[in-house]
Amino acid sequence: MPGIVIVGTQWGDEAKGKVTDFLAKDADCVVRYNGGANAGHTVVVDGKTYKFHLIPSGVLRGKKVYIGNGVVVDPDVLVDELENLKREGFNPNLRISDRAHVVFNFHKIEDGLQERLKGNLRAGTTKRGIGPAYSDKTARFGIRIADLLNKEILKSKLDLLVSFKQKVICQVYGENIRLDKNEILEKALQFGQYISDLVCDVSAEINDALDRGETVIFEGAQGTLLDIDHGLYPYGTSSSTIAGGACIGVGVGPKRIDKVIGVMKAYISRVGTGPVPTELKDKVGDRIREVGKEYGTTTGRPRRVGWLDLVPVKYSIRINSIDELIVTKLDVLSGINPLKICIKYKCEGRTFDTVPADIRLFEKCEPVYEEIEGWPANVDWRRIVKEGYDALPKQAKEYLQIIEEHVKVPISIISVGPDRRETIVREKPQR
Ligand code: IMP
Image 1 (cartoon, rainbow, N blue to C red):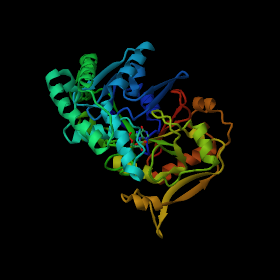
Image 2: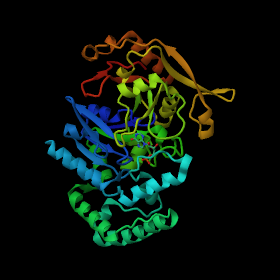
Image 3: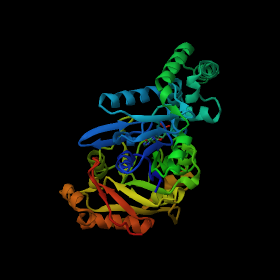
Image 4: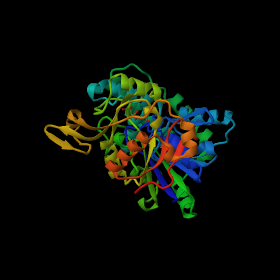
């Protein structure tokens, strides 16, 4: 299975970082295809926690890792991540696409100002400059990694872009923030020098790797409901988070993707604004948040949490052509009884089971639940991991079975803890 996409089926934070690290064991390289430092991928190895915003999670396995053209690169974050890894004794084998765009500090300033202006329509962004950087990319104002290696081109592009941003900040938002063109240029050139040996045509390298029969993992950031086209617009992010984004964000044709793996949490979480039909604002929600440590990796914000909602998962399966599912954080639900799973919505006298484009309609959706008995709090997950899927509590197996029955896609792996080892691979997922 050479070309494998890992995609989030919900609102992001499905533990794709852990899954990517786990699957990277059998891969030759991992390439990130979208988003920027808004993502926070957590990997736990032997009790030690590593958090990545830009570097693909396969880096801890010593694999070749790539940042594709679909990613927007924040220089400060990337340098920090690389230096931290080196300090920890890793020797990151990273390559960065010459076509990836750069996030500047003025993008972050603009992000905050846009959110303020939007009021109720704000997405509750991570303020990492993601929206403004992607806007500049599509408006053809953007600065690419390749530009950082050519002082003249960089200077002329930045001259235009910084003047424009200065006008926007002062004249549109009425803010008295001064942008220093020379400082911005110098910093960008320094970063260009720092990464110059890592810059390459990632599309060419990944296509070559696939030609050699190597296994490539395309690592998605965020989730399907945050996708710029298919997510809950305008409450999502600004990139193509879906499996199709892997082709665009790396530069491979659709025929190079052999398998799409969807990652879903055993419940839902959402950081940011917008409707969440199964949100729990009670003690059960608080318990899930605390046990599941549902606080943003990037911003530290408490995440909104709720019962598992299969409507977005089914929608994701359709949008991404998902072949198999990985269920994460099943352990977090231990001791909650009963458990509820949303299987469809009721709205204005109708029932339906897909995510509507009309956000006002989505706001009115009421979940229709299937209720099941939970499993006890004191499960010995270590033993279960050793013994395998059959050793799961019978109610947990029922929970997984209900998911499979409704979404009609097999569950291949179950994650019951943040550590690499806390993972159950199912021998033969049921089709
Ligand atoms: P942005 O990507 O920072 O512009 O934020 C847009 C929306 O996507 C906000 O609601 C964020 O909370 C959400 N978002 C962005 N990145 C992530 C992520 O990695 N996990 C979960 N939510 C995210």
